Every structure is written in C-alpha cells, then in structure tokens.
Image (cartoon, rainbow, N blue to C red; front, side):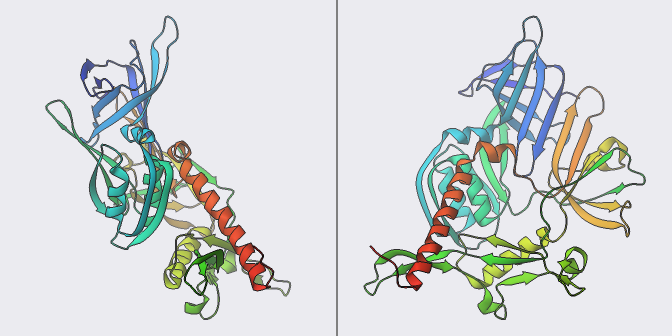
Length: 390
C-alpha cells in the first residue's frame, strides 16, 4: 500500500497529511542516497519534512523536501532526501580526533548538530583524523572511512511527531538473508554489468608520511617517505593473490604469468601490521572484476525480503566454470503503490554516489592531503641528497 505522508514545516510543526497522486518511489544505497519521489496536487515547500512509516518493515523514516517540479495544470513532482541531509547545514570548523574510538569520533561530529549518537558497533580500535572546515555530513562520512562502519539514521516517533533523531554506526548494515539468485538460468529479469575498474593481483600498501623533527624536537617541516609494511612481511612491501595471478596475471615474457601490480594509500595508518591488514583487505576487492547484477525481485522467489545491506547467493551460470558468489544488496529501489510493491535490487559491491557527491568537501580535503603527502615525499627525497634549502 502507499504509505501515509505526514507533513511538517521546517521547524517540526505538523501541517497535516500530504496526499499523493499514484505511488512513491523509494531509493536507498549503502553509503549513498536515501530518497523518495512522488506526485501530488499541492506541492510542499522546500525544506518541509515528510514523516512516513515503511510498510515493509514498520520502520519510521523522515525525508526533507529538496526539489519540486510544478507544471501548470498538472500534479507537482516532489523529490526529498533523508533528513540526514540537514547535516549539510551544520559546520565543523576543526576537530582534532586523536586516539579516539568510533563512538567518540561520532559524538564529536554530532556535537555540532541536533542529532544524538545511537548504537555504535564499528569496533573499539582507537584511530585519529583531522576534520577541518567541513560540513557535518562530510565529517560523518570521514568517520565512516577512518573507523569503518555504515551510518544509519534512526527516527523514533511519539505523539504523532519525531521524538528523537539518532545516528547509529553498525560495523555493517544487513545480514545473510538466504535469498538465491541465478543468472543465466531461472533468472531472466536481470542485467549484469562488469565495471571498467582495473584488476590487480598484487598491491603495494602505503601509510602515513611521518614528520621529521630536529635535535631539539621541533618539526622541520619535512616528512619521511610513507610507511610501508616490509618489516612485517619478509621485506616485501606488497601482498599478492596467487590464485588471482593465475587467472588475471599478465605475460611475464617467459611463458608464465606475472602479477598485475597496483597500490593503495591509507594516509592515516601509522602501524605496519595494520597497514598490511588494510592492504590485504583492499586486494580482496581488487583481484577480480567488479560485477553488478540488477535484479527485478518479482522474478525471484523470496527476493522481496532482501533489505539494504543483506548478503545473498548469486550463481552465474553464464561463466564456465560457474561463478558462485556471495553478493551484497547495495541498492534497493521500491515502487510503493496500491498493488504489490515493485522492487529492484543491485547486487555487488558498495558504490558511493549521490551523498558522497553532495558531501564532496571531504573528498577534496583528502585530495589535498594526498597532494601534500606527495610533495612531502619529494621534499624527503631532496633531503636524502643533502639538497634541501631554506
């Protein structure tokens, strides 16, 4: 059924019920967008809030109107984003997070907002980063990157209005749900996309460039070369996957197959053992083609119960031998209408899209950090040659 949309103004005062014309399209992604679109006769104002209860799982959801298309003589089309988008208007001037847990880091970010910290299960490992001149949503995404976890908005309702807004940080959204998808046999309503990403069978791993101090303990302004993990890996600063090399390796000129090398940079990592673990995890995602399956759930028994983040079994019989994969639902699109909901799933690996773009301040800050680190490496090289001047 079409969920009821309760309309509130920008200051959480209830305005009534907003009737829709037709159904509601709900799109959600892991680490990405959470939006609804629908038509209605009377367009709400930009910034007004829509509170609704999900007919699938009974969870309350809140969205903010960000765009309306209002043709003369026709229904208006409304586009609304999850109320987490209000964090774009909260600003973090500077937060130096040093040796903080995920819960402490999340609390530091949300202290600049009206949101509270919910359940945090991203681990108790202490890490650190600098949040500097960013909006709170970008800061939240940065916490996800550094400490791990996948942020989730949790809305509670009492007396017909929002009682609390919290941000939870589970280590991973979703569970194993037991659904099974077969590409090339029983499943016809499915599109497979092999992405253009390079396949690497071995990765070099680089960590943080550490500052250089003089004999008095004062920073010189120079940096050492980036941290590597050869000291805990038999002298090799890379890790490889032999099974992947045999399948995806390149010709070595002697009739065999050599590794395809890539590299991964973790600018906040200061421990060699941790750096090796991070690089190994990155290699697992890079050593085979990235494949997405877009599935119409109407063609799959039991598929309607798949939630965002859930793991499912995928059998790709178009390959020889068959691919037996454990894929993840990283995008779910639902058409909530009077009839049975139409559900389309994207199965594969996480893609950061719409919200990552809207919170791209964090990406720009990271790019600046990478440029600075590269420049620091160059400075360190000149210092090794005794050519550094002030």
